[in-house]
Amino acid sequence: FFSPFLHLVQRGMTYGIKTVVGVVKVQSDPTAKTAGFWGTTDPVIGKDWSKTANTVYTYCWGAHCGHALEFVVALVCYFFFFANEQWQDECKDFAFSWVSNVVAFNLAAMLLFVGFWHWLVYAGTCARGLKLYKFNPANPYTKSESDDVGMFSSTTGNLEREIFYTTLGWLQSATLQCVFMWLWASGRVEFYTDFWSCPVYSLLYLHAITYWREIHFYCCHRAIHPWFDRKLGLLDGDVGAFMYRHFHSLHHKSYNPGPWSGLSMHPVEHFLYYSCAWVPLLFAAHPIHFLYVKFHADIAPIGGHDGYDEPSANGSFHWLHHAYYECNYGVPFPIDFDKMFGTLVDYAEYKERGSIRGLLKGAAA
Image (spheres, helix red, strand yellow):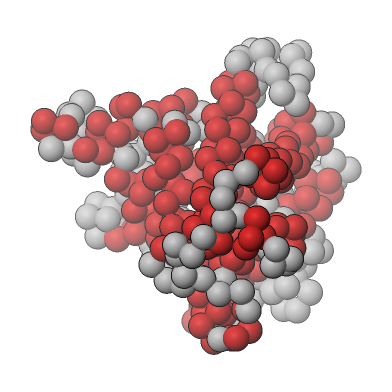
């Protein structure tokens, strides 16, 4: 509701009510502003606090509000598959009946959330009103301005590639959900079903997921970029260069990304990316903890890869990474690793100069 957490949403990897309302608003008024969480012109309660108060608010509440969509989807999934305790009997053994339901739910979520955002900002009529806000003016899905962007087809072939690999990602995510349901039901991994039986532990666990996801993403992502030089390989001790060349480079084919680009990865990278959801193997979890981190990984990249400034999701921080590869590996929250290691580039400064040359910031820059 307040504006202190908006800088996180603007530099993050998600979309919500504010962005949907903002995209629709600029169709009739290109200068329309949506500073409030609900898409209002101004925040409902105050525009700004002190820097310290803004930071406290962001870490304690705002950062989590920014991923409300992922949590709602996790809750819906929980009520579909876990609310009835019969799942513990059904899932002791793998069976087509329950596995197919899990896969179908996940694929439906993919089509709904990725498909909706693609339609809103590329395939639908709203795309015309957003041209002014695109980071890269070129449309990644058309060869000429007269071409139309389809829901599942493009004249460049980029959309088809992204949909294919994104679908593989959601299938791997669904498989991970099936594996954990089986591990829990068969007694191989400890878990608990009463969230409020240990409220402090449950709430802190849930709270920590938002931080964990971003820390895990940075570490995993940085590891699959060259550690020293892109031309090196395993024999030179550069595991990152090997991983980039053989796996992560597929994701970077989307140098001008769209909503389907977020999970357009090689299956090996999907495996590493979704390892964030393995936490219940180390710490006993309620199913909602697993579902939240899983759907956070599924849904959060959609908005951050759409290629637009505000009023859309404004993934300017990560767009620079897709455009220039060796900067902005993570997000500035909860730890600004890019600033720490000298790979931070500020989009406002880039926009002013038109190049990242001389803009890398941080301790190691």
